[in-house]
Amino acid sequence: MQFFVLEETQAHEEVEKRQRVGILGGTFNPPHFGHLIMAEQAGKKLGLDKVYFMPDAEPPHIDRKPFIAGRHRSEMVKRSIAGNPLFELETIELERGGKSYTIDTMEELIRRHPHTDYYFIIGGDMVEYLPKWHRINELVTMVNFVGVARPGYEKISPYPIIWVDSPEVAISSTEVRKMVRNGQSVRYLVPEAVEQYMMEEGLYLD
Image (cartoon, rainbow, N blue to C red; front, side):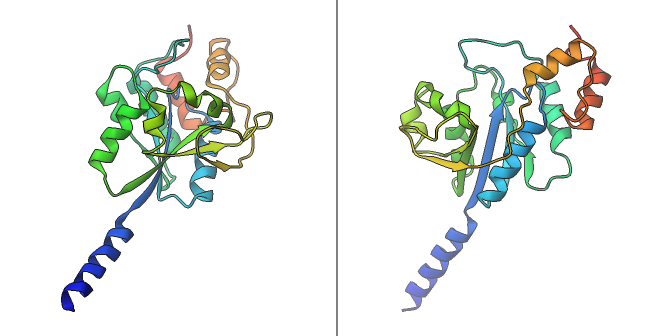
């Protein structure tokens, strides 16, 4: 009888240990308030323990876009999430290098943290591209995909998606880079600490 009591206690502790962690991946070239709002809304509405911002080393897209060194992007993410206890920086893809396939990253994260359930946060406009993701049929068994709803995009996918609503903030990193290059103000588009870092390092000027 005592044996079963111990077993129940261990099982209960096992359940309590599981963490629910969101992941927001991307180049963050640079990070802007749209990223922060999306992560905050998904994290709070799903009651996640943490949301990791995960800069990729090399996005596996066919239409490659120029991006700056990972150390700059990592530092800007670090500065942009400072002060929010929900957010953390995850550098696993920068450390691994090469093309950042999500399936490789999740296999490694789950191996390192077997008591964590992962929620991969993507914009509603990216949901329709999920069928093109590398080994997507395996990936959907490893993580919970969270789609942040966007106006103009239907909540339809052949894969299970947890949908959350969020205020729409039409900011793009591409537009921020263009504005910096043209000497225009990016105040209120990126956190002040990110703007300061871009100025200090002379980023996106050419």
